[in-house]
Amino acid sequence: MADAAVRLTKLAEEVLGAPLPVRIRAWDRSESGPPGAPVLVVRNRRALRRLLFKPGELGLARAWVAGDIDIDGDLYEALDRLAGLIWERGAAAPKPQRAAVLRALARPEIRAAARELLSLAGPPVPPAPPAEEARPHRGPLHTLLRDKAAISHHYDVGNDFYELVLGPSMVYSCAYWGTGEGGAASLEDAQRDKLDLICRKLGLKEGQRLLDVGCGWGSMVLHAAREYGVRAVGITLSEEQATYARKRIADAGLADRIEIRVQDYREVRDEPFDAISSIGMAEHVGRARYAEYASALYALLKPGGRLLNHQIARRPLVDEETYRVDEFIDRYVFPDGELAPVGRTAGQLEEAGFEVRDVEAIREHYGLTLRRWVANLDAHWAAAVRLTSPGRARVWRLYMAACALSFERNRIGVNQVLAVRTPDSGASGVRLRARDWRG
Image (cartoon, rainbow, N blue to C red; front, side, top):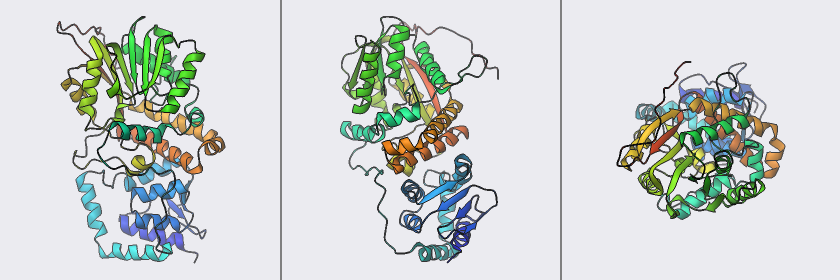
């Protein structure tokens, strides 16, 4: 058989009701699809079996992680062309789109196409998931033990691996890129500028006490202690992050001013703090626990204290009852992670007692950041594979490239919300200032 690609293209177009936006190259070296387009390489029949036994995003994710499928050509272009077929037609899509997909699957010609796929796939045996897949957890979401296991899956991949991807800054959240003369030119400069922006929004002063929730490898507490003279506590659920951060702090001679703990935010008892930073951590909290998270941080602050909550947001296009995290991200990247619209985040902070004083949307900055991380990974691919596994490196490459496009296309956003525990006097302590909205 030397026509597998032709048959796969025909089958896909029957299901989609539209031309396939990429070429297909099959295991028999046949090709089919639009000339000049990125090529989806189907390396073996096992890829088809993965799709048959887990149709949709999870089957594709397993095939990608296992190396059963690949992209020949520009990864960003391929993902952009495929986005409307995968992420925007699945269970996370608005109800009208999901209904259209279900109607299409019920058509006789689609059932015939499924039988065709069966004939191509080979033995009807479900392939085992790749080793990099997190096992689904049971029981209530966001308990202390379950959150620690989820964080370990994502962050305890190895500090050496993250050094390759993140670079010397070791900051795993959206950088802040300058737009004019003197703006950040490198990833390291942009991450430093982000940390400094947060310190300025928090109004940090020498001698104050800062809590950094989800401190990662210690970059925020190091910057705040070194540049603003604060005393800082950083908390993380990752043992590997904590070990790395403590060494950085000792090497910087700041061990007398910074403490790193392996601790959940719900376990902090040594309040009050003058300021709290939460940078890229609240996505792990979950909607069932968000009110508790907001109330806990409010209680940890002095009256007049400030919270800077830096958090990825989803668009409010899907109702709460049907929203779920993408299966690929849930199984391979952030188990139990959840995104909320920025309006709901701000509302819940205010319900906890905070006064929201500023919201800055910086989603374009995250697209730039993610592209730099992908470039770092590509430049050190052999080392990344050696430090983790081929499958783990493929997870991060797909995840970061797809997320870059999601931020660039306004499918998701990221916001810095500045909130104050405003005292009874009403004096927030936040200076009045003019916004500059020039393009």
